[in-house]
Length: 164
Image (cartoon, rainbow, N blue to C red; front, top):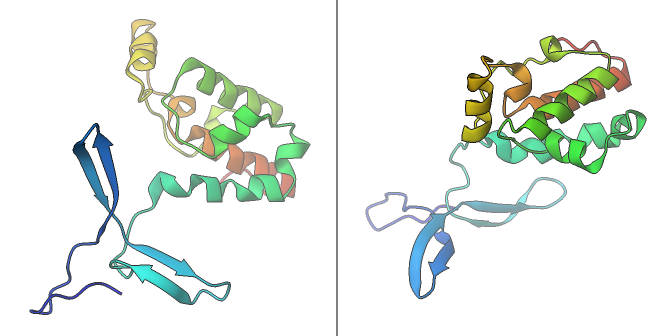
């Protein structure tokens, strides 16, 4: 449960990580943590665990579990790098974009099947390289394209349509 001060206000979540640079504190990171049992009951908590959070890319490894558990990764012969790409964000570097496009080709799909949107690479060097060559945003360059390609592989493997 959250810590309550004497006036009844919720205190900030506790500092759980402190990064040092030599003897100096470079940064402190607060967190709310919940440990649950198999039935989902909280057995230990620190901080305000009831406050909504946006997990965003932090849950990409969880979203990639069906890729492995359905057998899709094995069926489409994903290598470790392709599985890692399905579990993470990328900066649009050439090797990541190539891996996404190669896997899409193995799935008999194209960038048009990605529903993550078109982006320029987040990585500055990769972005400048594309712009210098006269290119623009593309779905394969989006930081979520690896995850979405993993979704497509799973859908293909279990017989679902790629759209949606």
